[in-house]
Amino acid sequence: MINKIIVFSFLLTMSVSSCKKEVLEYKCDTVNPSEINVEVNGDLDVKFNFALLKEFEEYTQCLQNCTDSDLDCIMTCSTHLSYIAAGGAFSIACHIENKTNSPISFTLEAGDWFMPADTSYQPMLCARDITITVKANKSETEIIPVYCLASGKNGPSEETVYSFCNHTVSNTCVNEIMNILKNKDLSSVTFTQTSQIQGVIWDCTDGNTVDLSLLDSLPNN
Image (cartoon, rainbow, N blue to C red; front, side, top):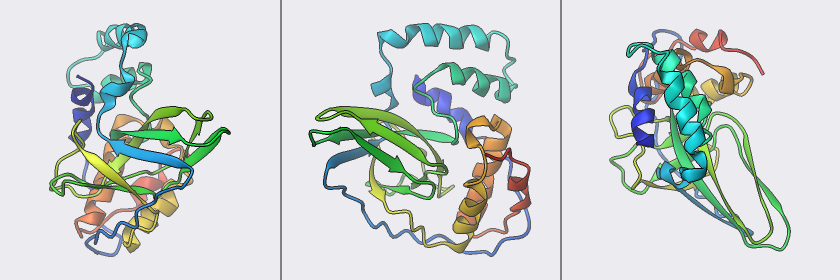
């Protein structure tokens, strides 16, 4: 059910002009922090339980004010759901186990990315900093907003498992995009703007010409 909500994010506005053409080459330098275990997958249902039914009722009530074609309205309603993350066109689940006797704060930085074990799925890019605090000897699951890095492949599913890669995407155009996005408030963008960001990233990773000016109109931090 949750992943069906995310499917709206496949709709995008493509862009033109002004960034170097360069097809992305995937080289994942896997990150394995010693004090924690990190597992990443597409199973968002882990955050959905009976305690969240009130949120879902608010979401469905909000949808009654939206027409079927008003995707901005539909995606705005999804902000009622704590397990749907703002700031990306898709979402994945990051499971963190703290193996120490003290609380730990773990930060995903803008530019960190995730390589799927099954290469028929798209690698995923984190476009804003996200800090997750985990109590001593406890586990925490956080829903991470992400953008896809290969338009011809599948989006995340419940079965998709990812490796956590260091933020060194070997692509000049992606780095240019991230340098712009790190100063933008991605949590407050509309669905249309989110789709445009995804379109710019896909243009970049597919080796097409990219219009970076589309990103300049986004709200600043």
